[in-house]
Image (cartoon, rainbow, N blue to C red; front, side):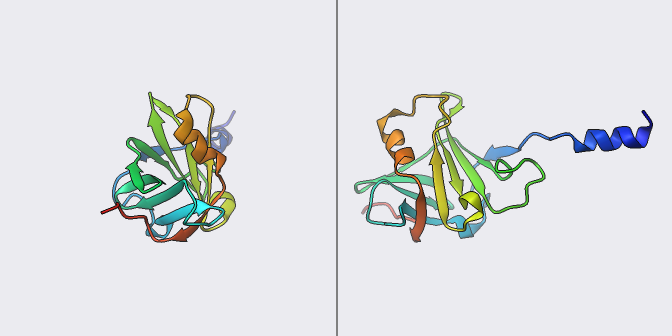
Length: 144
């Protein structure tokens, strides 16, 4: 095979998606806000995202997810140029859930999926069962 066609063939191969740890300023601020089941901010569980991280609000308790990975290309591969962004908290070196912000290229829509590779526990199973969510307000603040 000649060098140019060989190079084109290599460049055409699907490349792996890239993910990185969630840090302040890692995400576009237009993702920040509270997301309620069906768009209801009074319903629980509530998902909240701000520059401090990804939170789950249940009752009046706001809990921060630790060890969250961000994937900007999980919706379509490394060449993906859409608006969907995935956040995936880790439990025991596995992704417990996938939080798909702007899911299906719909601004303000959040779908939460259980990849089935780890037992998420009852509280996280409830989060996945309440999906889809819609942005309904500003980020939830801790109870004072």
